[in-house]
Length: 126
Image (tube, rainbow, N blue to C red; front, side):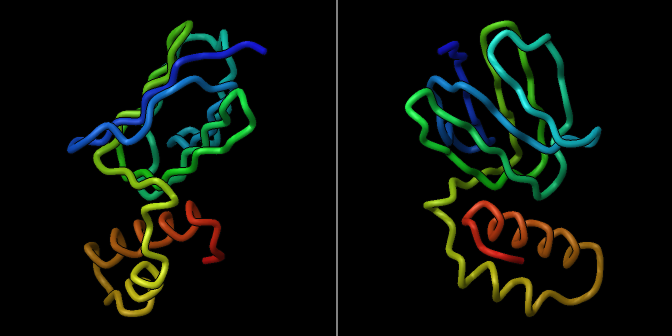
């Protein structure tokens, strides 16, 4: 099976890195699937999106990402996010509380988008 290297990096830390057989992310241009050998590209990630990485052994690594870019070269995919959380790190109850209590306004809209992304990444319904 063909593989590629993947790095998921947030401003404050490296979230995940390893080999993958596919990567899925939502960019401002739409949903994007990347397989080994994909043509080079640079895409802007949507605010409050989810990135899924499928490893060669069949594991799926899921992360909520907040802003940033996806860079694809011949052998590597780099997800460079402003912030990112792996599904296992997400406090589902806290995310649900943010969705319930966010007031109207620009900051609240961003908070709701982040909370929704956290819930999606954790496999919860929004």
